[in-house]
Amino acid sequence: MPSEIILIAAVTVDGFIARHSSEIITWTKDLPLFKKQTMGYPLIMGSNTKNTITSELKGREVIVVKRSDNPRDILKKISSKKCFVVGGGKTYSRFYPFLTDIYLTPHPHIFGEGVPLFSDKIKSSKLTFVKLVEVPQQVGIYQYQYKIIKA
Ligand SMILES: NC(=O)c1ccc[n+]([C@@H]2O[C@H](COP(=O)([O-])OP(=O)(O)OC[C@H]3O[C@@H](n4cnc5c(N)ncnc54)[C@H](OP(=O)(O)O)[C@@H]3O)[C@@H](O)[C@H]2O)c1
Image (cartoon, rainbow, N blue to C red; front, side, top):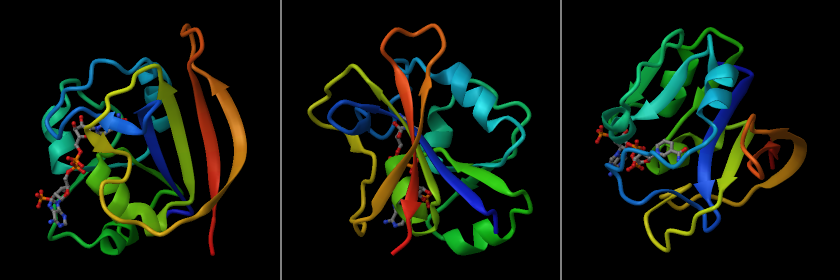
């Protein structure tokens, strides 16, 4: 199992990752950063997210999870030290117990409704702030990096 299991997401100010489950996301400004950070590492995503991806994720193994998959078994098969859980809300929730880090980029939108970061009920966790990363060439958009403190 990887020692770093990182959730990476773009969120609205009111905590949504999409307007609906089949939205093709066009509002994110952090894709070059996403590419740089995830390059060479496995990406775990749910089937809804897979269906919304329009560009090729070159240089990264893409692991698409179905409801019949067990998150622990998926992770146990990964030999690299680091992997990324890239969404959507259902998949973030299912892998939540195994996450070590959260990389979150708030975007200047309020959707009011949609797919929340965690769409299933999860337990509470404390986070420690690690780093703020400026999103290149985007005024006022930053990625917040946190470590999850395991209870
Ligand atoms: N803003 C961002 O950073 C970001 C990142 C990624 C995705 N997104 C957006 O998020 C949206 C998709 O998110 P999502 O939450 O709808 O889907 P998702 O997590 O991408 O995919 C749904 C996953 O949940 C499983 N599932 C469905 N029903 C289940 C059940 N009853 N019990 C257990 N597992 C179940 C599915 O398995 P089956 O295949 O078996 O149905 C699939 O693995 C899209 O709009 C996408 O564009 C945004």
